[in-house]
Image 1 (tube, rainbow, N blue to C red):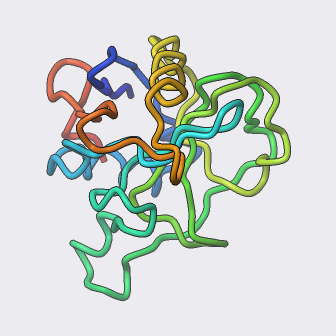
Image 2: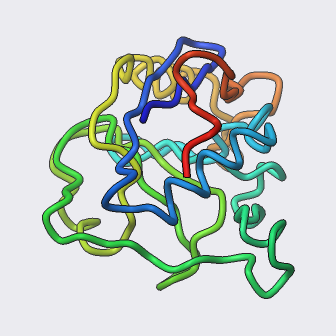
Length: 175
């Protein structure tokens, strides 16, 4: 199952690991369905590392899983679905950004270079393949060109927004 991620710099299609990571896939798809990610910024971009998004507060500390909406505050986070054979080996790998072990919510990241193997076994990978990840280079370029010298963060008006477009790429009926 694929999701079309629309940014102000171009579209990225990600193919979810629905069989291997069902909790994570359901969370991602359902948050897309309720338009939770619409308008989210890439709130943290680190050269040769990751571009992180999925926090509606754009602070890096916010975000809830779909399970909080379904089951209450005690379900804000959900468990890791780490598989040792799923690797951060390619640029554009998408994984959950967690607050610690078994503390996944809405935030996720794209890798900005190959071979980030020290992340393997620590974060649930979301996708098996993707198209359009070359746009991540544009995100990094803008970040480096326009970053705020005080804290290396862009202002909301300068940074690409993230939207998940409903349509043929997103099957909202999957279980």
